[in-house]
Amino acid sequence: MHVNVSFRGLFSFFLSRSEVNNRLFYFISPYNKTNRLLIRANSPHCRKSSSTMEQAAADSGTPGNVNIPVPVEKTTVVEATGTGKRKNEETDDSETSGRGKRRRGAGGKKLRPGERYIPPPQKRNPGVSFSQEHFSETSYYFEGGLRKVYPYYFDFKTYCKGRWVGKSLLDVFKSEFRAESIEYYQKAAKEGRIRLNETPVEDLNVVLRNNDHMKNTVHRHEPPVVSKPLEILVDDGEVLVVDKPASIPVHPCGRFRHNTVIFILGKEFGISELHTVHRLDRLTSGVLLFARTLETSKKLDQMVRDRQLEKEYVCRVEGEFPEDEVICEEPILVVSFKIGLCRVDPKGKECRTVFQRLSFNGKTSVVRCLPLTGRTHQIRVHLQYLGFPILNDPIYGSSAWGPHRGKGGLVGKSDEELLQALVEEHRSQENFNLLDIPDDCTAITHEADKNKTLEKMEKTPGTSEPDKSGESCSTQVDVCGSDNKLDCGQAVNTNNTSVKDCQNPQPTKSHGNQTEGNDSTPITPPGTQDHLCSECKLVRSDPTEKELIMYLHALRYKGPDFEYSTQLPDWAKEDWVEAD
Image (cartoon, rainbow, N blue to C red; front, side):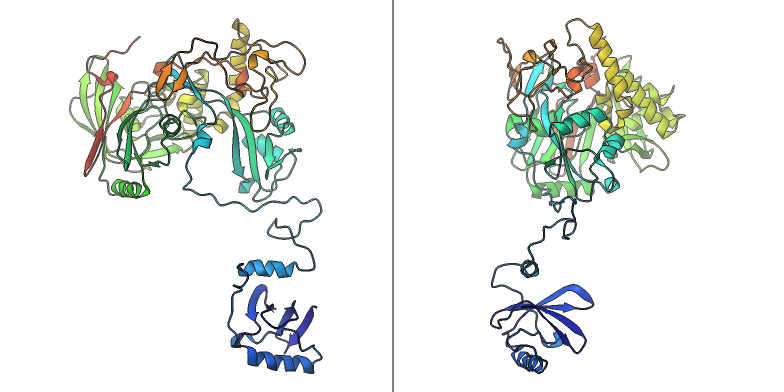
């Protein structure tokens, strides 16, 4: 029975229970309807006041067996511990009694007709690392001196950004995910590859709301890296030290996931749950240090902050570097955080690098580098400023910087013009992967790049024909990219026209860090071809060693009580000569 009782005009009460013993009721303030006090009616602190209130209720015609609250100043708040539930859970149960439970969504309010249910966001555990579930997404194969990854299906996930709220999913794809056409997204939605709050999206015109969780299943292709194996230098239970080959990123970023140090260690050595102490650029090789435990990670982080760690690099630069020691203290400014582009600028952060020449072979010099600060691309930017860019540096040795290539800080272009010039240069050379440009930065030139590659395919005998319908290799695809795939050599398109066999790699099997030739017909894993994937229709030439190796190597990492180092790379030896 529900009874409203007025107490001297100050408070209103909602009474939901009629029994006194061990029952709970709610106190609702007129000034804040959401505040509720849970009071046990048989509490010794309120028995006397309760009888007084019962008498008052009797005088006003209110049944005496109804629970009546006492004034706030004479009560003690008691939590409902008998049921093992939280206070707010008890409240929710009583609120919905007799009226049906509300479905939570949009802040706990009732859903209006046609309104979508949006579940509350889930908290992410930052301590969770990559596991065997992630490592088993695909596998490696080795070909032409390169480590390659079989294409695989992958779920990109994100919560709705603030700037997307109120926009349709179609508008967001048009404005921020231009690497693929709208036609692609429409086909992907029909096949259930685009999901909103775990529900397949049937109409891309759906309007996004706060806390919407989006999932897009894509067919993912990774660029190749050098096949040189990772060498573990130290693994003592506290730290793991490896000699990182050039071209391999430290952790997943951009288009790289399995072709990274973190994934190779997990897949081939069974090592996971590592803490990153420092990073190396993807094209840089050498000493890379990880902490095995959180305690060691904190200790090393403190050493970094206190500048107790010494790093030594060696590089080969263009031209004859001065014999005397050179110290560069030019400040460095980040031009683009997306691709990590930097330059010398008075508004930048203070930097200091010491350089010492080790040798000169008549064309190039080997230089020892001691960075005393840790700015992004510090060694590369300072050497460019001095007029001795690192050999094979795709960014700071680029002609996009102008005739002086950034020497002395002379660029003659705005930051926007410089970025555009770099993008255009790398697009013309079809080596976006060297610049580490994210997909959204290359959307403008993406179609031109596709068309250029398709023209090559048409002129090259023996390659698969491009199908303008967008379905040159049809497969039975489900969202997870699992079993129901046709082998690409047996594929047919939906128009029932014949399609040439797609070029399957002739792989060398991977067994840990060892490789073994496979004389039999290779078995291509399921899911390596997808009829919606534009990358599957392209034929890209493999990068050369020159494109994957920049002559910069982390030689030594030293602390108060440890020192880790590698051998000098071959290109750093005095008698080394660059191959034509």
